[in-house]
Image (cartoon, rainbow, N blue to C red; front, top):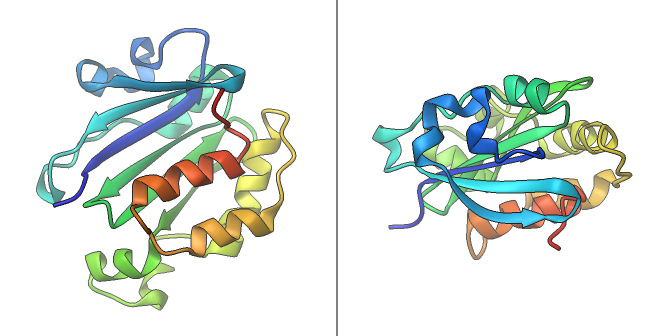
Length: 170
């Protein structure tokens, strides 16, 4: 059995777990890493599919920090739901590990589009998301990550996405 849980990513001078937007999971959050530019990556274990948590609203987190925010809900290390928000460009949702995600929702690639932006559309939203914190990123490398299989894991793919968004390790 793979990893189940959330990664919460935002910029703030205060620890994210102190923010009201994450009040519902405050006691369950653990700082995983601090990245360049004041970015923080927090983890919240998620149990298995029947025990998901509500980590809060990325819109609220973006509004409270005044900066883009995102989370990923990783499902059995096979796929992840990614929700992002920024104060100006708004919210968007996509997924990583699309083939595995289709299996989880009991559909096919077309069914995914009922829930998630396709890779190219999500990449375009991600470019706008990154521009709100002063980063210029290119859509094609983002779309490649968003379309890639979750190998070796959805977690690895998520951290590759962060790097392509310009949320880079120190």
